[in-house]
Length: 110
Figure (cartoon, rainbow, N blue to C red):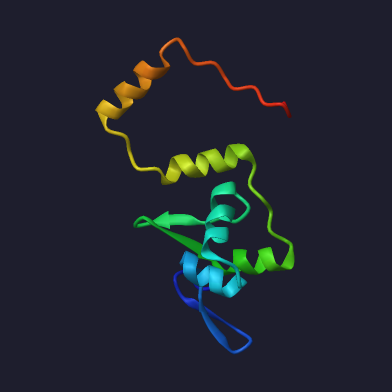
């Protein structure tokens, strides 16, 4: 698949990377469901310029049931990588809020 280009599927010209609305139309689901899958890690995607991009190959793998889902650690790393940078003031507020008082949350499944 050419990066940033397009691919042809059964006479349908599809871009190699789709926006959420395009992915939803391709999958025949609501765009909010695509967002849910992106944030839960069930569908890989990348934010570029504040908008999600989803690889056509990942959509095809999802439809074929061959898409590998992200682990929680991979999902957190993706969120960190796509998050905007914090200002020094924001870092100070977070450090103050958690200084010496942070206790990990225990879940029923752990």
